[in-house]
Image 1 (cartoon, helix red, strand yellow):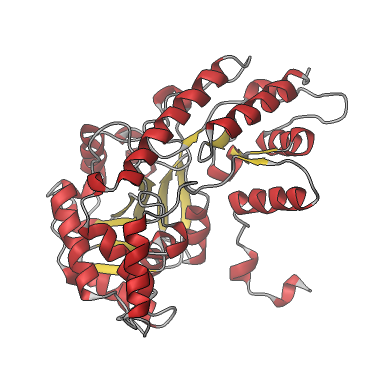
Image 2 (cartoon, rainbow, N blue to C red):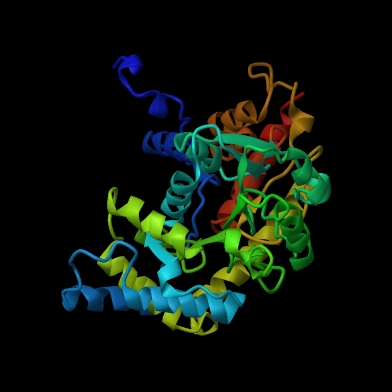
Length: 402
């Protein structure tokens, strides 16, 4: 196929590196290799039974027809109640739009806010799809660097220095994929103070990992009165409820932005799955603390994080901080750049990840995909037994590099 026949829009997009590594891992596995996949970005737990049962009830009760574009009213009410109860945020149901995943929620918002040439400020490291979605909407990604030394957090001064007359959106996640970084209330307030100085600058706050937070209470940047009218809060059920395949995300936003997203979605996908919405309704109508599977999941993630960090400490040259959320570790592996095993030279994170995949069948994601060139992302969304086997292999493969 001649790529010149395709649109510039799609030719300018890069493939998701996380999905690419998953595909390569699957190919090696299909060839009979014992691949341990630490590149995947989803919980390895099943959706809680009470939520699955509500979906079965929806099917049996024929809740299987087209849905309202913004979502069922009772689900949007449950989300509104959740925002108030858990985040102290006031979003009416008219300010909520349910979509087919938080990824669509972010894309909708960017398409509704950006004109060609508008700049979007994105702290590094970032989720792989942020820059591509910005480009798809005609925007220009502007990256704000961070480092392991400050837990991958950007400072208000750094943000201020990147703001220009073209700045339209500040897009970030907390807890963060890929670093596991969690911003405190004080840090969010300081960032909001700088962002508030430009009156036409919006904030898209991706909070999809809210429930996988080892820091205690989750903090939302929309809680501050002086900025809340310019914040679009994005969330969903994928990570916290182990519901990745159900594809339900949502925004809470100023009403005119929510209405614009409704209009856009009405011309693209229309409403999200009726059955998935009923499952999400059950999730938000149930006290999360009473769902034993979810409590076990969070405990398991913390244990796995600590296990991975303990093992990484024993590998020469690897530096890691202590992530406070999500289920990733994002270590600095630049010590191995320039080394080789006699056949393969490691020049960057991509080389290192391919070396580990081909040599010992351990799949990671290179930090370049997230704007972190000295790093790799390790997902610990798998069993301790698999993590132990993977880290044994990783340690051996890295020791062979001279």
